Image (cartoon, rainbow, N blue to C red; front, side, top):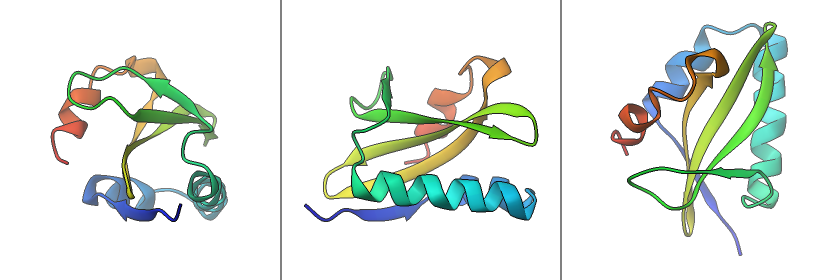
Amino acid sequence: MSFKITVLETLVEQVKKLNEKSKRIIAEKIELIKENPFRFKRIHSKKFNKVFRVRLNIENNETRLIYVVLEPNIILVCLLERKKDYKDLEKYLSKI
């Protein structure tokens, strides 16, 4: 099955602030998501049942790339810092 990737404005703004190495890491992970969106760990959400996260180490911070699978679309939502403990997750997901 072919998936179409959509990127929310929130993620675009977050990625603009990063250095080139970090942008390249994120691009590589997005390619892996395109190949198989169900390969990464599923996380719980009140709104959606197919929410996943990808572990990243960006600029020495534990970060998570959050995305939602609404077939045939993959919606890339945001980057979450791990130390904030997913507190902002529902706020970002409400923008879908």
